[in-house]
Length: 481
Image (tube, rainbow, N blue to C red; front, side, top):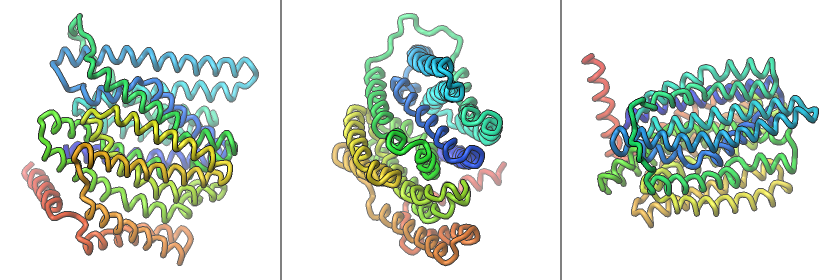
């Protein structure tokens, strides 16, 4: 599992770099308004997938490896038929709307909607392919597909934006997900599956609860601030917010890549009824993610006001402050990732559903009150506060209901080290607030973080020994080849 996590880390880094680069290309070529249109399309892509996927990618992630080979094939075929029907229906509605806009004299809008429909379908099938592959433990293949898409993405986005405008940039984003989506074909074996096969009720319940919580997340919390900002403030403010949210979105993508192995890992302990192993894996996963991503979140927040306008252009300077808030609070989403996946592995999808309802309602209510008064910055704070409260609730639930505690002191030491990292970077930028200062602030912050970790003994001794043993084993293996 550690090796699989490393492959997913590499793929996640590639996705982060490609996504950030593509956002810069869109901003430079299309400006603030064009960036807002593309950001809106990406939100529609995510929301439409969560609404129409019926929870089937998550169900395959949990159950794809269970049963005999013929039962696995039958399950995949049955769930894919459902998936094709629901996503195809929604894509048809989107395409029909595009044709109506074209007939009413808005060809530019029509092409944007057609491109968005294609992006949605491609992304949706990539999530299904990911669910199957990761459920079966094929992490290497998913990493290869991710890297392939990332290599294509910046070029396709640039070409599309230059020649076709926002619709072309959206089609370029679609190309990013093609390798993963096409990878689904390899899991359809041609041997016969049981003719009388019916999907187990446990799978249906698990999928339904995931679908309902995912749909609520799409409608009430996941980037719904873009819809609220668009309603109250307009597409220009969407562009500013989207540029500011780019770094935070990349961190969340990297988190998902790192955490891709967790549901199969936790499920294996759960199925063996190994409570001690499950608790140990949970605690190490939480500390490991925090160790890697806390300095990126807090350090990134320190440099965002300088980095965002330097990368996206002077027109995006207001997005720098928004980005600082969103990147800092992204650490709360990092903390939520591990307990969320533990709850999925323990099949507590009903609890996840209820928590999603409350989170979504609270987030929407706060956005409707705060955004008209304080604009995009207010929306950023709402996003951050609701994410923080959600993280606390998820961690507390796992501690109380699942008897799976967090090692508080090592986690606090990591957070303190990351805060010192951010302070060092911020202090340097206060001294030299330009590209030279930005370039110097990153290694200064990284050095401060490492020194702080050592001085505070933030990494538990047992985990240090485990990491050293793994590294020594890999080094010995490579020398012996």
